[in-house]
Length: 413
Image 1 (tube, rainbow, N blue to C red):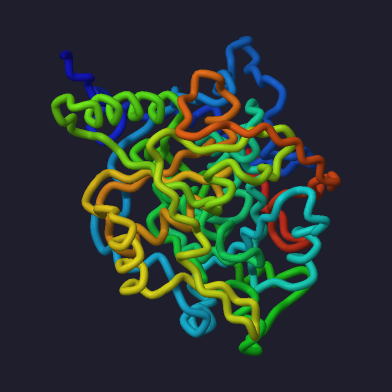
Image 2 (image 1 turned 60 degrees about the vertical axis):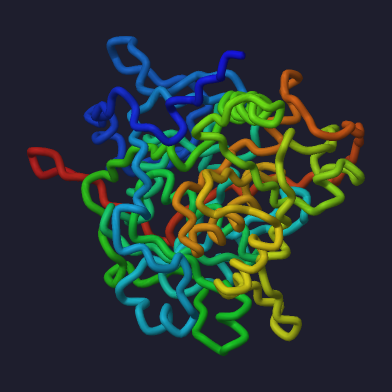
């Protein structure tokens, strides 16, 4: 019996590590326009008619054609904890950039941008993963391109050396997703506020509304250069290939190096396909050979404040041990669309699991492709929730703040 070969793009170094040419984009990152600068729904072209860097890929399987590297930035050194306390943040506000990364399902009837405008931590920016995403996809919030991410960071006054602290008002999971996003683009100095805005407010710490003080905000450099760390990202084709490797091993074949184990953060009922998925028409079920590790098992909710914190490391370690999960093995986290999977990702990194990735499209991507093998019977459900349009401005500085235009050679702005 032939032994399947593991995918070379999972944990091995690639044959190339090319430098991305950002010269075309640098002139654009400093411009001050009224356009939605993070939207790239239409093709953009230079004057010579050449494509301006957008990548057109079939939905659900966006193999990276951008520059990328595989080394995990957390493994390179000084990795301690992804979490910071409310006390620590309060004492270090002059040295960090807070980001409100709140996200809820679009039909929840909450205007998160308005909530941020009315109440945010001092100098906090707002980032909406529904809009900072790869725009040529049907998937809800796929990772953006390096250009989109770089533009977003520049507009928010963030450079490569900025220490970013992510918080949310949505049960910790969206802060974890934004944290993973930053890591996937190689940003090293990023943390999560454990307990988020509910804990901050319950402790009586200061909150602000309206414009922030422009003079005290850190200034971004000319542009934000980034690459995609593909060791932290999984795509549909990689998941299917991994299933083939697992099948081979489970059927008595020779052990195959590089097999990854998928951990699903959804509830058990969703994992088993017993209840409707929250998105209309999406079938229920789970990825073949995946294990169920509901993200709710990894968090603690304070009934008095509704603050959500990640459980202590000893409790997390005991949980995964009870599940029979070997933290030294390559692990991939998944969920409905790649958000709550980030809670499992962060929990595993808190335990210093050496090889952890996140399936960006998750079940939404997997279930909508007919070639996807599934463990359990697929139950077709149609659940029609009310729709709620997304806010006009997805992520931005507090009102009144705009990055300065770069000066031309003759001194004009």
